Image 1 (cartoon, rainbow, N blue to C red):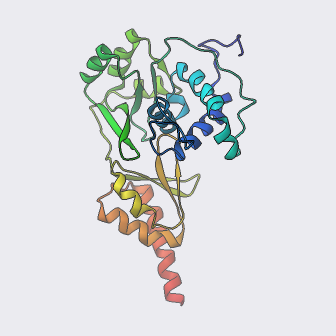
Image 2 (cartoon, rainbow, N blue to C red):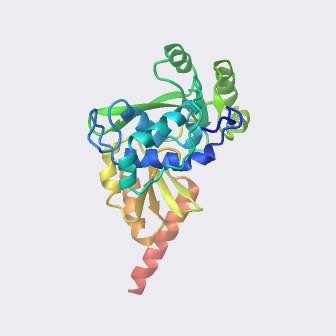
Image 3 (cartoon, rainbow, N blue to C red):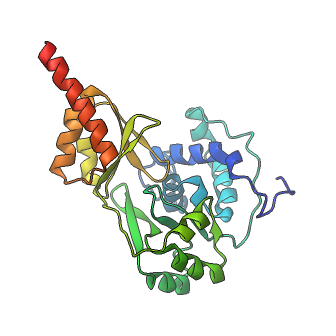
Length: 273
């Protein structure tokens, strides 16, 4: 363990491989309560899926050492997936550092992470306008929970300060720039990522996953929370449009523009042939 690191100097970027390992274990996990050599088991299951889902900036400092121990416990599985964590530095323990606020990928909100059994803090957070509790299924019997906030950033900072929350990169800047009323983004939305030339699909209904799997050029990502990624390709244009229309997705202008471009390309190809 690097004893020189403390809360102020801890470098999360050194643990990208650790995040990748947690995501990989969650990806093969079926929610088992007993050891079955398929991802997480027992008391690790909910926490493992939660931190696979959350971006690294949303991890409280205390989880890094626990996740590092997972790489030792599940080293055989990780080895079979060709994920070598043997060179990962052992993080400090950071006792009590279990509260973190990070940017939400929707561009307006925040992840607010703290222990679910801290009941005074739970009750206090519930009183904030714009708070939300989310549940994500694990297999057919389990789920994990996380909290978000979409509201005036100054209110969030004032609330978080006496509870000694750590703030992820950009949190203070976004919070100070956010003074308006609560804005809750649509739970069913698509975003266009220009750098990837791809569409990101966000929705809470896991029953829709089967429909997404029928769309060409699909993949998934845990960056900023689990979501589907659809490459901006002609073959995906019509199936993606049909999916978005069936389920009344909110489509921002940049996503609509790129989707229309693909549809026009499809029309030109059809006319040519």
